[in-house]
Image (tube, one colour):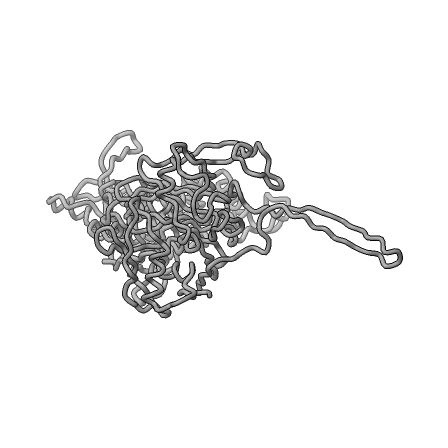
Length: 584
């Protein structure tokens, strides 16, 4: 029976296709009544399910994530397949029920090296369009190792189920081995089609390796509990702080540092060199910060018009000047935008209608081209801004830290105005630009910068922002600006930030129940806690006796019959972890 889950997800034991994969013969006999002459027609056709390889879209998700590092010692690896009937399209062998696909986990030195062979060398009866020269990825596994890893015949039906209701149906195949701690691991989705007899591998174990077809594989590394997703994200709180450099003890310097400025080398237009103060678009926030200047900067013809001089310290603040010059350079680098903007300005500056020096009736240009407006709007969310302009000093964002920031709207305005300044040469050009500024707003943007191995270890990390009233904020920009640095900006004032894993990162986990034993906490129909299932012994290679674990669950839940793969998966399912930060 379907087993309902939160968010309208339904788990189903299996879905058998209407026709199993293979070759078929269809014969039609017809007898004509006038003379009784029989007529017969025979046609052959093939139901060609996936068998020796999967297309790139065949695997929807894997867990643990490919390339991830973390605490997966209590997690059974699994793969989500796009084709909902795939695990039941073929048979594992005579006298054996269950999926023909298994997830086998190898750790450390056990990891086999995949290689490619021709399909004709596998000793299989090829079907339909399969050719003997087709490339097939295989692994060779020592017979004794494979015997220790293969699930028992009673375990097989519990190792695959159907997930429905989250957009589209998908098949899930679960492994039966827990990853050992401190070792690199690789999981293979392998075919055991026709290889099992009464649950036993045929041919049996020997000194020779057993060749298996590998339809998919992924790698991950298992660390201790301190490296779980929740622990690693919570550790970011210990590294939180304002987006500024540490104080130096010098009151004059600390007055600048407290506002997020950093000292940078500055080459003057005349060729000299000095040290000036610079701050990018991020201020300490989101509660504080804001523009350094109380009044908006005027429309200027060069970046020098935005320099700010501090006479007492004899130093310049070049933040807004750098933003303006950067915007201009980015626009000039994009030939299409620069040309379209300059052409539009020439039309804008012409008098409407014929007359004067314009013999043709040229309509006045009312607004910049949509492509230019879109480009400027992207720039207003810091798109294309180089990393060093965002984080000019590495100490602003130490390793394994999170910084909450408020975007300086005036810095953004200077950046956009610099790009908009293409063709601005004379004072009259500046006045015309000031009279027809681009329709690009600068909404209040706040957000966070995260520098952590979580960024690279969980590429599908989900981030949600909320204001003080609990309303969700729209994401203005999210970008992984380096392999381990993530920038996320929201429209509005950020009060709460949630980091959590994707729905695909729901996984199947057990719990220790003493040395060499494990169990699982059980839940009722409405999610209420119902104690734990009967403890079961862990296999020598870390394999889980799935059927015994399921039987113990059924006894505690008082389900005398009908406790199948769906019910087992529901009890084993762990949702993705969520960690919440409250902004300072």
